[in-house]
Length: 187
Image (cartoon, rainbow, N blue to C red; front, top):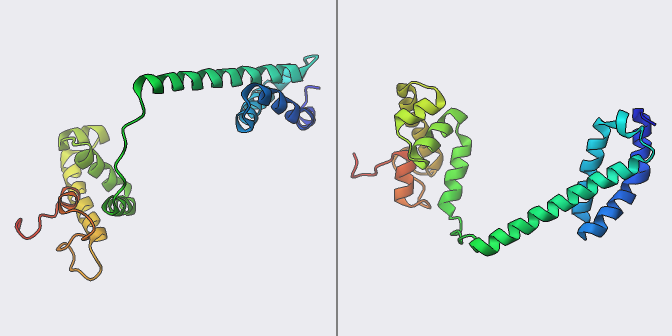
């Protein structure tokens, strides 16, 4: 019973049985199916050996059982940590300007996104951005300038002249930090 065709037959005839066994342990159909699927995945790569056992279903059932127990122990530890640490801090709702900036960043080529995120959002100096990306500092500075310009173009209203009015939905400080736009006073 060790050839691949036998595995398909074995899988088809025993999958529901193993899911039923694991469901009785977990009480969760989704978890039972995931553990069972993982057990069968482990069996197929060892099918030459597992298929030769007197009861290969017992091996799969035991592996699925162990996976379910491990999952339940991990969930128990996570619950204990949550009780000990308390719930995570409430996050402020995502504002319209954040959505616009994220959409604008997605429109940029990766090389500009990388430098903008590392420099402006993670507050890394140009030198460190250059080291992390393996680029000369001059290249990082050029990409920052071009990335800010492209981002400003994306965030500008269609009826506004380019580089003069950053999208009105974004707070001025956020727009200035990400686009380098200084407004009228900076000219």
